[in-house]
Length: 242
Image (cartoon, rainbow, N blue to C red; front, side):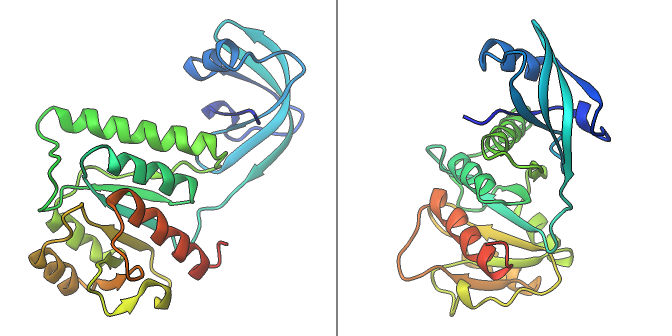
């Protein structure tokens, strides 16, 4: 399996430079990944920079990389975001993991009206940290140069307000337009995916008033864990990413 790790150490690095990667990420590489001197690997900072090179030195919780190549990936434009409703049985987590592998640029956890799962009080931060870890680990596995951004937990009112910043594309099986018929413009896209019980009529009306576009994915009803990733795959084609 290809070696890929994350560290701020490679930000602004240059070919020929030796960078020191330390901390938990390096400890995992050495203890779990069984990293050895002479191996080649890539290290990214999660913000577009990826350095590839040869391991020249190893410690218990560190390693040194002789940089042989550096590449930088600009932020995509328009960006593709996912507002994923909280869902039971970890289906929301499965959705954001797959969305990351498919190239989503950012994620918004959404407390939809019909979400059975609730994030409340002090547990909100704990859940947000878990989602951030999922995005990071999925990004590492798929060797992404940019780890998706994560916004704080949002209410339906918050999602509607994002209509001033994004083109809201609301998935709903009653939508008249197929998602494949969407013509992207210069605005960043926020794909809105509801929970297992669907998006409530009042929420659909609110999103429409905020300028949202309602679209459907085929004739079948997809689970909360599937709808977002499937829609991202469709939009990747529309945006020319695939």
